[in-house]
Image 1 (cartoon, chains in turn brown, red):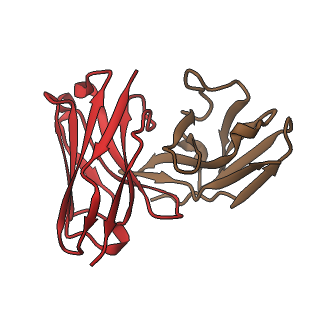
Image 2 (cartoon, chains in turn yellow, purple):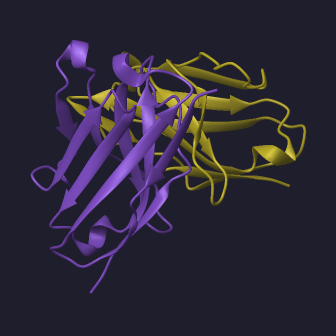
Length: 106
Length: 119
């Protein structure tokens, strides 16, 4: 199955833009989903099918996917956006998660 | 509002057995795929198993790490899914999340239940 690589950590100043890449071979040919997890809590879906936002997710979250990289962008980051972010896709009869990125808003 | 609640976790010895339950409320899960995702302490998310809806055949698929040891089943009349963990290993320790799969991704998540495999 696919291996999805994410940077271990990303830091962003409040109000600035954070970009989180998710690398995988030909990931652009798959639908990619993104989850946000705060410590001690269950993950929450923030982007699905590359660039779709579920109801209730702020517009500052956006996604794109092409070639070998999918990207989650947080525009105008806020303190509550801290936590871990995971990309995920379905490939050859298995669901695969990325390695996860810890976002720090400081 | 869709809610999921896991139960049945706790301490189990290696080689023992444990059954996790997930109760769904707020919608009928009969046409939904259901899944379990786990997270070892301090680690990332790992998919465990998924079961299709009965109209789709009701079959289950498993991650390689648990195939042959875990069994996923569903009871739509009770709006519940069950994960039987046979012959658990210490590396099966972690928080287990029950999720729905309605449109492709893991849409809704339960709060999670801790399973500790230790002698």
